[in-house]
Image 1 (spheres, rainbow, N blue to C red):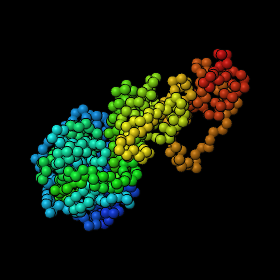
Image 2 (cartoon, rainbow, N blue to C red):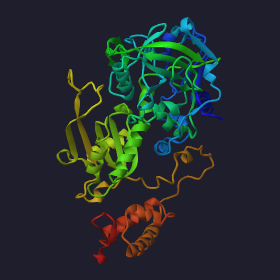
Image 3 (tube, helix red, strand yellow):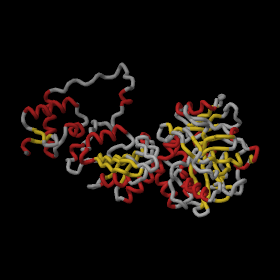
Image 4 (cartoon, rainbow, N blue to C red):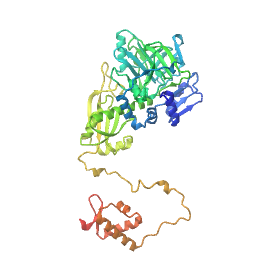
Length: 524
C-alpha cells in the first residue's frame, strides 16, 4: 500500500495512538483538547464544516516512529540513508487531491476548518502545509511555513527568517514577478520531516522524502500555476507570493519555543485554486509540540553525523524536548581521553544548537535525573564547562538582546560530564542491590496459605562454627565481599553466614582489603 496521510492515520489506529471524537466539536476548542490527550485526535463532527480535523499526529516520539516505520532509535539511520540515497519525485498518473478543483470565485479559504491555537493568535493559521516553489536557477524547493488566513483568497506566509523560500521570493521580487507556490496539506510524515531539513539551495527536499518513503513522491502538475503539488495529499492550495515585499503584518502566533511570537512583516499570498479529495481530512498541526517533535530527528541525525566525523563514538543522543528539540543536546559516548571536549565542539558546530552536555555511556540520556546526577558528580566547572561567544543563533531565542538591523549572535555552552581521566574509576561504582536481577516483588506478594511453614529456627552454634571453616576455605581461594559469600553459599541461612563472619572477625582471622573485600589475615 502506498504511504500517504491516510495510511499514517491507519497505522496510528492500529497502534492505539489515535482517538476518534465523533461528538459535535467547536473549532475553537480543538487547540485546548489536543494537549489533554495522550493520543492523536481525529474530530469527525466539526460544527460548521464539512470535513474532519486531525491534530496531534506527531506529538510524541512514538508517533514520529510510527510515521517513519522504524523504532525511534533507528530513525537517525533511516534519515541518513534517505540523504545518501535520495529518490527523485515522479509525475503521478492519478492525483486523488484533484477530485475536487475550485478556482476563481469558488475559491474560499473559510470552507477549510483552520483553527486558532492561542489566545493571542492573529487569525486562523495553516500549520501543516508543505510549500513547494520553483526557481529558474535552483529548481524545486519544499518547506513548511505557517500561513495566516486574511481574506477568502488571501493569506500571509511567514518567511521573515533566512530560508530557501525567502531567497526564491526575494529573487522573484527583484524581477517584479509573483512566486507561484503550491501548499499540500495532509501529507505523509515523510514529507513533513524532510521539508524541515535545512538543505542547500538547489537541493530538493522531496528527494529526501522519497528516500524516507522508499518510493518516489508522486507529484501532480498545477492547475493554475506552473508548480507541482503532492498528488496524494488531502488538500492543496495553489497561489502566488505577491511581489510586494515584507510589508504586511502577520501574526502573532505561538512559536516552537513555547512562547508567543510577535507581529512579523511578511509578504501576502493570493490563492488561485483549492483542490481536495472527495472526502478530505484537514490536518491542523498543533503548536508547538508537533513542530518540536518533528524537528528532533533532523537534529539528532546531524548530531550523529558530526560526532562520527569528529571520531567520537556516540552511543545515544537526545535532542531534548526541554530545549524545544532545537537548542539542547545530551550525548553519551564511549570516551577516549579528550573525547568529551571534542564532542562538545563538534555538536556546537550545528547551527541552532546552544547547549550541549556530554556523558559517559553508563548514563541514560533520556533520564534528566541521571543526566543531572552526572553533572553533579563528574563536573568541575572551571575545567569542564566551555563557553563560545558570538556564535550564530536562532532568532527566536527570547534571551537574545534586540539587535535592530543586524543578525543576532549567541553564546554557546558545553558541559563535559564524563568521568575525569585523572579520577580513579572505583569512585564511580554504581550501587547494585544484591540479587536485584533475580528477585521479583511479585513473587512475595502472593497469598501465604495458613498451612505454610514458619521461618526456620536459628542455627545451632556448631552450625555457625562449621560455616566459619567453609568461609576460610573460600577466602583462601579469593578475596570476597560479604554478598559474594552469600552467592557462594546460596543454601545457607543469611544469619548463619553473618554470624560466622563475625566470629572470624572476633578471632582476628580475617581483615578487609582496600576495596572492602574480606581476606585471610595470614595472607597479608
